[in-house]
Length: 502
Image: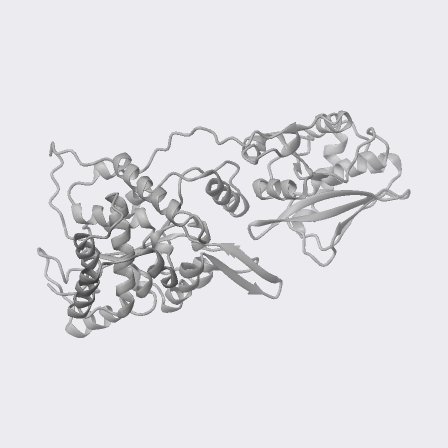
């Protein structure tokens, strides 16, 4: 009779459950694995046999046994070294070299070393969430306990090596995860206190962070656009437990990170990146930069230089917060709820708006460049600002406001929005659909007339009307005001006009 155990592996950023059948018939030694294993899974033969031998378990060749493994379902391609532990435990039980154990309520994952020690596997957090959902005990390497411990009330069995694990299984030594978030003191690369001047740009970033509004910065090379973008993560609210789990799950599955992620991601892909690099895809299917930026910042420097198909492909994740990639292997859904920050020069040489250097571009070159800064993707950007070059005095004694103070205001505004939208599928002003604007944003007749006249006078698109309302709502939340005042509308309007005029 074959021994049946459960294991799991990572497909995309999610965990898939696999049934591992282990049969040990008598005969000349043979190790065979079926069920569409990849090359890494097939190589478990050497790892498992030597780990058994060095853990005091008689290997198949010493007992005149074959070792045949089936990974079910057979139609699903299995990848990685996740199944080593399940195969070794199944063999030990099948050959009566360990005591009685119940396998129906357990998921076994772990890579084996030759000496029998258990090595980490990528995506353990996703597998732990699967075990929690299935109400099963997770059996895994001890070195990954800190990562798994964030899941609430998950039953676990862990060990450093195979021999220790077999003893724990026989004694049914089950622990329970605490579900607590470790205390971490975050250190940011760039703090707002390190950036001199740029009051208007800093204010725009604060508003963008408070309402999750996508933002575009336009300015000459060297004026500080990249520095400001990098500093943005330092004023974003600290991640909640759910967000830490989401981001750690992605990085554990894709990047092979074996620790929790507490700082919001900041991704800055090069402008030559392909659609599959930004959105996801390839063979095998891998998440793109929009997924790696989930719950964080996607910074696109040299924004107009990105290929048009790349920019067009951003429209779906910007609106939906996820990406669906369909291939012959199946359909993959990747999370992509990110904060877009784009930066651009005003012209190909970069100095059209500069007060110090002369622009060398022709009129036609500038017009062609301006056309790149238009279209559907620009309609999804709520805040647009010009960033000017600032004189830097390294010995200035003037103190700039630190990120911690700005973050306090941002978090306060976010809490107001979360409370307001507690019964909605969105939680911030920037994510508010047009259908909800009338419900949550009301203006007096006088202010509504003023806004319509301003939109018309500035020759802004009808979509800009809704952008101004959402940004003004965020400004009011930062100020702790329920009513949207005219001064808030004026400031919101100032972030809509982005004319390329000296």
